[in-house]
Amino acid sequence: MPIFEKSSESSVTRAILSEFTKDMEEAIDSDVIIVGGGPSGLIAAYDLARKGVDVVIVEKNNYLGGGFWMGGFLMNSVTVRAPANKILDELEIRYKEYENGLYTTPGPLACSKLITAACEAGAKVLNMVAFDDVVLREQNRVAGVVVNWTPVNYLPKPVACVDPISLESKVVIDGTGHDASVARKLAERNLLKIPGCGAMWIEASEDAVVEKTGFVHPGLIVVGMSVSATYGLPRMGPTFGSMFLSGRKGAELALKSLGKDG
Ligand code: 48F
Image 1 (cartoon, rainbow, N blue to C red):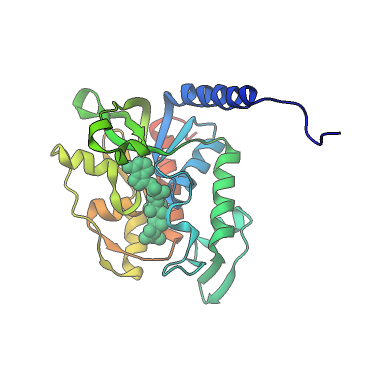
Image 2 (image 1 turned 45 degrees about the vertical axis):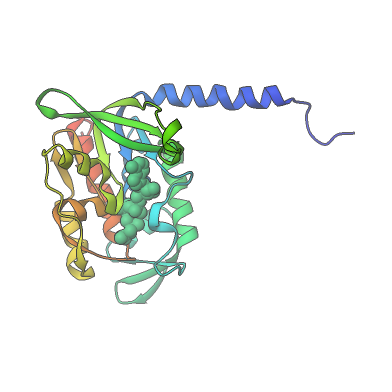
């Protein structure tokens, strides 16, 4: 007596393909595209999706979480400074106080719970999909992204001529971390200047990243470390409170521009 229900190779392949086709069709037009599924992008996705916004995360890796799986130097504990621990409370992620206002939580636990929160809230995910370029409309407003399969970037030259496709959205959020990939594309076209991150200074950088989070160009919001790269702010290393608060602020600004903040 077999343990599992009867099925076949063709049914399994069809099941995957039909779901993929549906997911892809839904991602073609959305309210908000978030490029990069690190901690700042995930918080933005979580906040937007639970407010009923149609949100798509474009992530070049086959996993979400970015740098949030580890706390630096391949050590698992990630740190968060007050008041961002309130977001850990909200997501029911357990943590410990190390010293006044400085908290630690295991990266694998915190990261997987944040991913779960964003996905459960309804954020759609396209993984192994790399941002390649922006869609620009009148007055150079960012109106979407041009994407390709991540592996295409690693093909040998003779077979690398695979055209990308485009996805449209009302707002794009750059959550690509230090790369600031979306903002950098605008810089390539002389529409922005990107100085890159400054040297390490945790104390100053976390406040500055949250303060500067916002629209850098019509249609484009920067969150997380892409804010730092875009404005030349100091880097902060393995502490994540400002990634949460920046992602949350980015979501609020997106909601406002969509007229859904009421
Ligand atoms: O780097 P990442 O975790 O960005 P973040 O949300 O958080 C930064 C912290 O992890 C840490 C720090 C402060 O605490 O210094 O570094 O700002 O996540 C960025 C995500 O974007 C994806 C990348 O794989 C990662 O998951 N990404 C980067 N470039 C692209 C991209 C691209 N061109 N297309 C799609 N995804």
